[in-house]
Length: 142
Picture 1 (cartoon, rainbow, N blue to C red):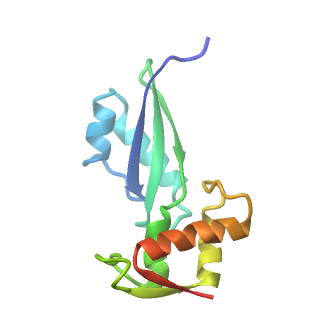
Picture 2 (cartoon, rainbow, N blue to C red):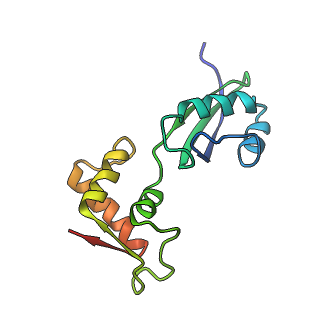
């Protein structure tokens, strides 16, 4: 018999830096899940990623107080800011440009996010990420 799912928890946790403090502790604690077990498993699963990159995770909580989790790729905006060397996007994206990204950088981001993008091809993925870049006030070159 399959375990009964009691809920899903969506969090963004820095790769390799999960600890029992908020947001992880309270989110797992209210479902009665073992917080330290999740932290150790998450840190092990994200050990190959660059430490500190925000990593979305979806935790499935079961009625017997066990859990499974799936990590997603880092958000495109974080990767775009890293590629452009910025700390934040433009406050007025259509009038104030704050940085530049090249087509090669966009292709690298699409390849990194390949599993989570719904784009049919590399070109479609580049157009999607380029739209995100323009929304942040970045100029796309190439």
